[in-house]
Length: 78
Image 1 (cartoon, rainbow, N blue to C red):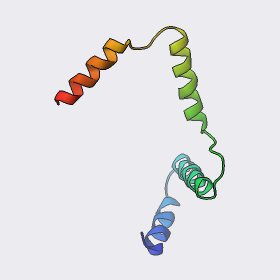
Image 2 (cartoon, rainbow, N blue to C red):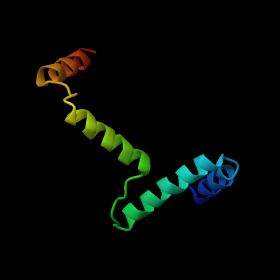
Image 3 (cartoon, one colour):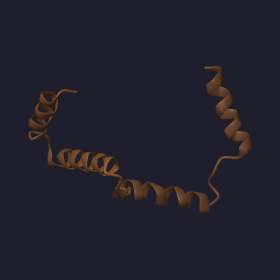
Image 4 (cartoon, helix red, strand yellow):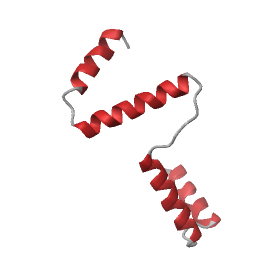
């Protein structure tokens, strides 16, 4: 990507809704942190998803090995 492409994208992003701009900043900050070797910090939405998944597991809501194998077999067939 050329520097002009990045400048054009950032210029267009200024017209986006605030929520979309915030998401772009968060994603760009994550990329920059990874490039600098920083520690990953999950976003609130990711943390909520993790909490929901853990709660589901605690309630016993997970697929059996046989169910998982069945799904993999189904998608391998096409």
